[in-house]
Length: 465
Image (cartoon, rainbow, N blue to C red; front, side, top):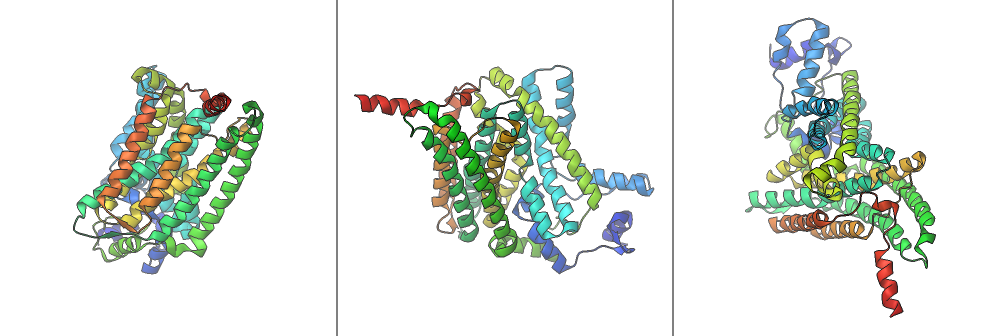
């Protein structure tokens, strides 16, 4: 009896009408459409669990629990970081340094974000590729969304804007830049190509997001008196947010139904074919569900609770960490939060770039940036509206300028469908310069409560001379 037969016998929730519920090759390919580049990127950090826990007890109930623990908690190379979760909770209740609570909470969020991707993939085995794709589109950046909601509840609008801006910048410049640089160096003798269609679609979506961010900023400086633009800017931002959410829904229809082939790049299919034949370097990736639907759903709910718990700690302690380390809140929110919170997904994108699978790497970086810009940011504006918090899309001139340059540089970098290490180096250098800018910036945390009219004041003074 081989290990797969043992697995089926030990997992009665995977039985259908008394027979093992196995996926055919066609079904696996259908699942591959829901197992998109985000799932594939984090799969590089997973490891096949040996069922060592199962030999201790043969009772079905306990067996189910042990299998779940084995697959969900121990089935990732980041499992050691789960220890940071109780450490952060204990540090909070025993009143240890708040800077320690901040860093421990960030470390605890790293494996939780990776496991959310794994659990959405498991649920997709039972719901089909379309529902799985929608679930991944909703939960793909759940960490950033929950942190933003807790920050809004504390009226920390600056933290919300900084953290979301940082997620976009890190995906476009840091992740994509590192992927292109490492992929170029590792494949010097190979011409690196990727499907431009996916990059073009995401670039258009990001340019639309940039327009919606730029207009409230420009509108602020267009009026004769800055005070007259406060309420209209808020209304404009809310209208633009509704438009962005509508555009994102159309984008999902485009991605999951009408033009699915744009997002099913050759690299992804080669990866899935390698799984089928057992020939790929990642042949340890799962070909079928390893936990049941309700088990995955329960784990996903539990992970979300812990993400919310740690996110609250992050929001409450970020200012104390800023004071303790001598770093600005803007630097911690724009640079540190996105890097640590999405480390698993970022590492997966870089690993696939090493293997010359740039379509997967680009799908991770551009897809995540698009999801933040077109879904999470406008959703936060709407949620703030419901909560009675006046959050707009005016991210101030320095932040909006950084976003504009990042989107434009990325669009130019990806326009010809080929890659080399110099492109990645340029993107990384852009990220380092922007990071240095926010490192030296010392802006009060509540500066968003008072509009930034520096540019208009300078313009008025020039015109009056």
